[in-house]
Image 1: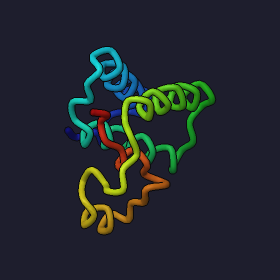
Image 2: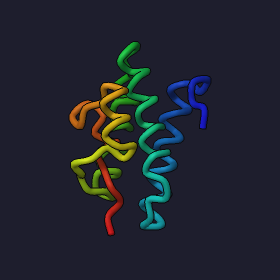
Image 3: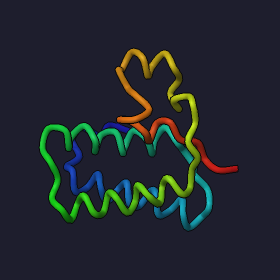
Image 4: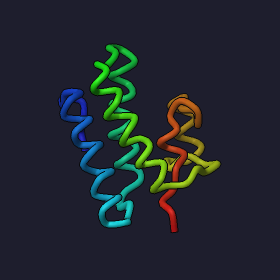
Length: 101
């Protein structure tokens, strides 16, 4: 999925919908896709901070995502890619999550 042309409000709405779908069904279908949506949001917010309303929405759905998943020691995309991209488990926390069994 190419997210570069999608604006921040639409990305946040997509993140909310994906997390809400996972919460309603009890199934996280594609951890990599979810992580990439959240990563695109994070990258954009590093350049231009979000409004308080957007930050509140992100906090709400980030908490829901954390509740649906567990922390892992390995990036969903693998160690090599994480190293190449410069991702860390602290900053890109959403890549270090796994669906609950």
